[in-house]
View 1 (cartoon, rainbow, N blue to C red):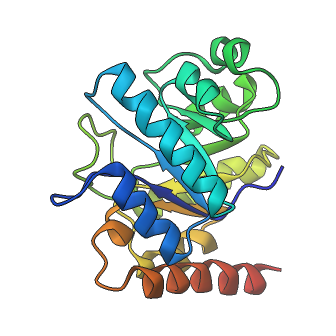
View 2: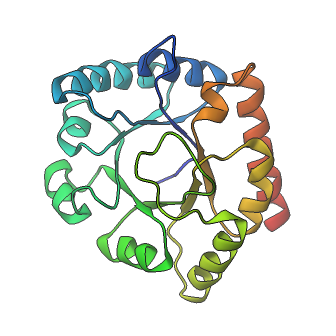
View 3: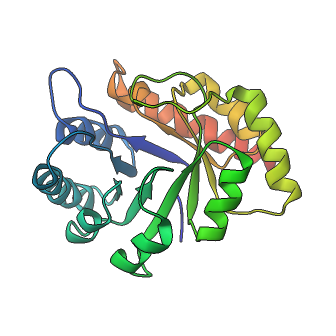
Length: 215
């Protein structure tokens, strides 16, 4: 089960929709898309998820649905992502089955231990810095927070891929991966980029170059 190192988390731009933002990210080269829709009716999110799932298949990309296991299942998504206040992973697993990957959010080392015990396939650790896309923001970690947590992860022998999230820019990627994280999740850095394809290439470049150094 291969987890991409670059995750795009959807947000609705002022002059567009989650669909148009995701299509732009796919055109730019993103291969791992998380549909994250808040404060919309269930049926509306399901309609979006079905259309976006078809779109992702056309681009040979993976769709992850945030928060809603039933929608992930009905839309034929590749995976599901659950926040700390969402349904427990074990309960969601009963809905989506054993094949669908499930990611979980974490803010502390204890959260990471919890997610590993729950059977998460990957973990989103953050926020790295302040971000407007999140209503109830957990304590900001910064690079020092990542270094401290990832040292504990290393000492505990935890190998689940951990993805940095929260206000990340291309120039943040190298120090983040050097701190021991597997990859990054970005939203605004791609949604509002003047040249999205250039930004995505730059992000993958930093991720892969840092990995080569690590190897």
